[in-house]
Length: 480
Image (cartoon, rainbow, N blue to C red; front, side, top):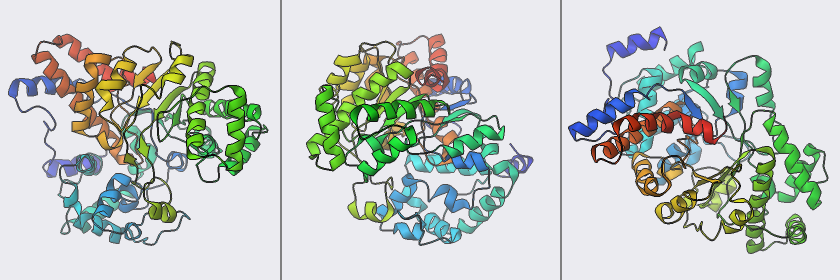
């Protein structure tokens, strides 16, 4: 940490409770604190996320506090939107790349005036942690302190030790994965590799644009996909060959996983003839909604087969009704905070894939959910028996202290700890990464302390599991 920050933090009292998220009962709290001390400074393994690889490639200063904390973070601007604050006034980029408001201070003042909206939310934990631990500012954000906070953070951002690579190193990030479309040329990853910087930034293969017939411009995407792969992707065999080629290209830039954001967990195992017929309908734009879902489901099984060949870990992020607001989607594009959880079936939906390849011990499929009712009833029992399945951590709306605690309570008794994959932060907000991992480590240590004091886990085992959950399981599950 810079000398500038050390002096600031000496002068200003911390607003962060050192025992935050630990149990109130003294014996539990003491043990949770002891467990946490052994994991708090472990390196961060961030195997799935959405930070921009361009940051690390160009290593330029972040433009201003608003573009660091507000405009890229849908956790922040969706809350403000819920209170009637227009996304244009927050500088959120429109679908065409333009921004209605570009004055960072104006955007920041709106944020500060409405900071009370975040009381009790995980966003408040992450942001307060970032203010203090990253920037050394220990005030409480409000209309009255808006300019003070803005000026302080803006001043920090002019310094070399607040550029992306320096922060990456200060955050003690061992490896971070970004997520790119197969249509991406990965030029920023190439620039990182060629720069000589030793920070480990890898990509992940996210093929939604070319496996979802309902994705905007699907047919044109497939054509471009084939051109990049050097294959005729308008034929079924050429299309599959293009996936293999692009997956290999992504692996050459460090990819160890693919990621699939499907509205359902449906899988299919169609005959080659039926799959080809459905693919041709998709290219012509004549698929019904049912047929589009069937095609997506079949492609999950095809991706699983390819994972057996190239060992990419397959992540399924199912159960999100993405881009729920038509007007927001039309004006601002995808991923603007309007993904809404839906009820999700896993037992029947995954059966075709699991019948095909589920018993393959060399296959690794990580399941995420936004339907907490499925944890104990479906997901933990499935992961607790199929060698190919692991449970991803609490995700999106449940990436919160209560969501993490419920995840452990509902899955551990059936799947144990070692059919889960530790934690990943899944974020676009760079400065929230250490805060999110800190929350996860605190919650897990609190849970482990409860198991010890209720006679369900030996104390020495708790210290070992704490290390696994904070660090080792993510490296192992994502083959990092």
